[in-house]
Length: 289
Image 1 (cartoon, rainbow, N blue to C red):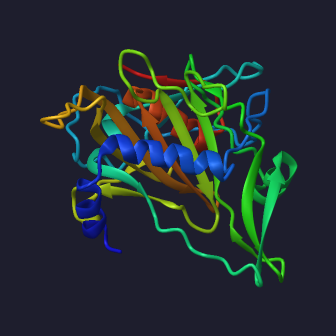
Image 2 (cartoon, rainbow, N blue to C red):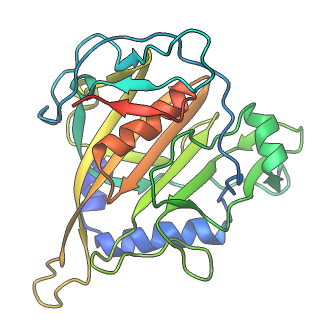
């Protein structure tokens, strides 16, 4: 299905129902991955970077400069403190999006494929790294349901479905699903989706695909999207939402792994920091004002 068709279909669906369906679907299929209690141990160290001062006055869709959004912190020689990555928000372009939808699920013939549950060791062995971002915004915690991923393996041993969902939210219900905030009836936090084969979710951009602006973070192209998303309850007569909240999406491929970050009720700077920490392997991400 083309992205234009996705947009038309998405426009006819109650936003509240889409969110509930997405959350319920992931809970039932247990495609949630437990976070390790320790911080991520990505080993790449960013030794140098490109340029720029930061500001948030860039309008969505502006073309970013050709330089990278990384800048070295200038850590003194011989010190053992972690290196800090400095970001330039001038190099970050944000595209308007119309929504975030799940792609159609493929049916796997049980005669040819098996559903297998991977634990943390299996996931680490397959991806070759801990998928947990080095930087996690304050106030967000790992889902208690994390710790395994349901994948599809062919009878010949080939991996047909490898998607992993990594969840960080402000709080959780007793069943482990992310909790809605009180003042704004929406989630607060982010879900990171990772796959080597192909992501199961689709972000629908308003611009044509060949016009979507891409940012450069440490030499890695990253596509950022924004949507003013509605939340309920909805007026029974007018169907108007109670209000709106910020939703950001970041999509990129790094070291043969496709990543997608869906962030709700988070600032753009925090979303950029999470993406940058995956690429740089550094927990200390700074933004110049």
